[in-house]
Picture (cartoon, helix red, strand yellow):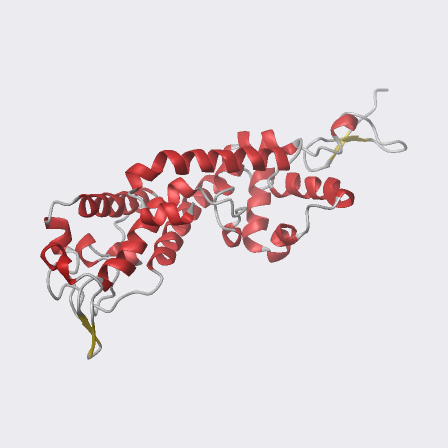
Length: 276
């Protein structure tokens, strides 16, 4: 599906990618066991799922949401190789010099900051989809901030996409765009989580996942072994602040010899005062 997102026009690829992403979430819900429905129903956990693990997510990437970065990144990498160009004093032949009328002769030489001007003015569908994808990503990032984007690849105008301030091509453009969007989504989620009480379960789980690598180690744990399935489901529930499947049958029961009751969420114990 990554190849589809990179090579098919975003407007055409959207239905298939959305269906694929929905299927991934449904599979995750089933794999998470009893905690699955609770995780997908929780707004914070649901927003964490598509984020990368380093930002407190699960790495279940939403391919439909990533399609704009995939298409723009591939365009920046591929289209620039269609025409003859000079990079740092070296000359390179183009694969399809016949496209000079659409892309513009010399548009991709080092130092050019208007590399996509001809493509955007050509009126072709690729130019329209490229511009729409770029605009959608800029709007998305700016919607999560109080100011206009001034850093990262999306700080450039669409005509200058894929190059730095000196007109030199940026390597791995798709990765750079995705990272900038992920970080913007993460900042917005942090603001939402920060409004929760300090000891809120969802807040504690998110902050632990972001700040503690050990809290993310369970992603690398083998899940096919029958013997480790139950512990893994408990870890998943804890990681996303979902109710504990193992404690579900015992909720409300008093611990023998103590004044505590079993709590469903995170296995916490609540103080219980017996009647006199």
